[in-house]
Length: 480
View 1 (cartoon, rainbow, N blue to C red):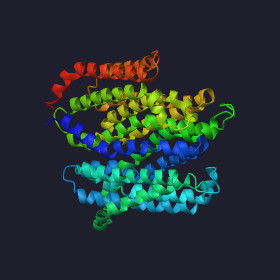
View 2: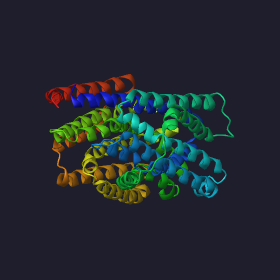
View 3: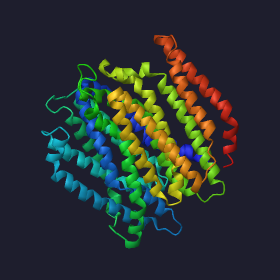
View 4: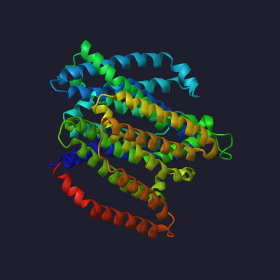
């Protein structure tokens, strides 16, 4: 089997554990937007934006460090695992103690002073995520994609079932959005049960030389992760602060954040594909780095990744008239215009992850930190300028500007240290034509069933045309 096909197969399996659960989780828009008004949904959006930052701090880049050191020649994967797990556990205990001790002041800072308990629950959620991060990474390294997928799917099914039960059957307005946090905590606790044999056999160890080397390697990745999370979540945190008063007449900034967060869910489909691909691609890149045609292989992987993402962008972008019905209240529909912008932004984020292989393979992870910090600066500046002008639409454009910038910076820097023959012109042409097609198709004068039929005939026609264009290259990839 060709390496391209093997990677595609592993991506599909990881998709079951990453995309499928998130797709199922996407269904939560139904109870959430029918029970919570946009202002209440804004609280959920705000809180989980902070959780994203904590996830990066807690894992400290040790997942990537685990892959790097466990695949080195002569490495002892068991020793690397024990060291990585010990490091993450120490960090988790220290940070969790801090956040629980200062839960009151932190809740006040987040404008929920009466809900110190939210901070405690969210700390527990993040702590469990961190403790199982290295065991999940080991499943990926050992090619146990099916087990990885099973654990993720069970987790999200529990979340979905409990959400529908408590929000649609046994809902208590006094509890409100707290249901969302408690359900997440209950579902995450099951991960401890799944990995109990791993924890029983784990032997805490900090082999001094290995630990120091992993820490030095992981620290820039952690900083890169924080910067990357800033790029993704900063707009959700600052939208309420930087949105001018009465920008949306008669509606609060929390209301605007709720609309933004709900519509952001559609763009997450692109991010889920990226995430599934990363789960398969990260160990793939490390494992094939020493192969003779590895650079040509990496270029081909990036090209077909872009082609796939363009088709996804087109399929979602021309079907918003159907997808909007997942937002149960029409109050959320006004934000649908940001979806194509965010889909394109995430596409460039996926390209950046592909291009970043050069600094991971050359142990120059600090370049990733520099690029991501630059991207964070672009995010902050762009949001500061665009939010007062265009509200949450400005935040969406800020994301696109940022992700395009870091992808371009990573490509230009990588040409110097680890040149890979990417098909830049062809790939950019695909992206630009797809975006133009999305906006062009949405202007067609159709309504109702004829609109759905016309839009999806275009999608099928484009998919067929792309296959005819790419089939020769697909055949050639069999030899890689």
